[in-house]
Image (tube, rainbow, N blue to C red; front, side, top):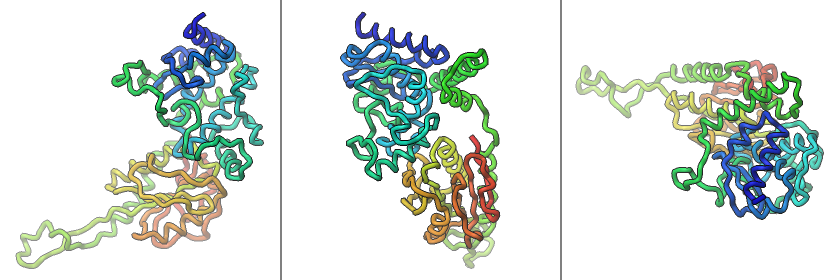
Length: 398
């Protein structure tokens, strides 16, 4: 059996283990590459090093197939949301490996799996949960250490963190290497999710992490929070826009009526907006990214020039003005105190008219509303009761 046949045989073993995962496994484009291991990218490719394939058993290679394809199916690249990749990539491995280990799947001896218990955490949690604890371990110098800077990706492909590797092939139109279009990848993700649910209904066994992810993929949002967010922002913006003023920077549209007397034009200001972003360890995941994207979209329709963002846990770590949520530096990971962020927002110049606090609600709040600005509190996880009475509240449920 040559190397490619060995890779394909391992893929079939993986399909035999998890038949419901077949569409994901069988869709991957095989690409030989001297990278010392196997990896997947965001274009639906499975890279394998021929020498590595020779050194492991077919059963071990089948485990690697499932591990690498789970990075793709679980959207780890999209879920990173600006976190340091050297830490995030450990967390996503732990999210995957606990399920594979419970299934008694063999790992190569040269590549022992990263598991939750190694950082004192339970199995069955999301990568976002492990990330907070990974960061604390690294900061205290008690973690496993990766020998790289916090901003550098670990070994593996871009499916882990969305960062293209130098050795990855580019778009098919440039590299000539086949890829799976994004629309097709989304169809595959949904098909696998449906297969998982059907397998469970038929009495089959599915690892708990895979079952929960499939249900989440197929479940519509419990609350159309995007509309609530848009309505809340527009309502607050209307209060600001209603405070019309006069300006001589441009003439009145009726200037011709007044002759030599210069009349001012009416000005309706766009609200100066700031986001206080909760970056404590628990505040990571797709709901947070969706909330930022939705907020940016609404403000864009209102004519805003960008949003000032204060990354805050128990202190303010960064102050940025951004035009897109992807540019936000998600810094923090400690305790939570949104009072600090609100106090900092009041000190900004020009003074903000509208403050949006994105948080899970596990924070103390000021006793009264900050003066001089409207406040919207967007609570993730549906815990709206944790919001202060004086704020306009939006409950974000995924």
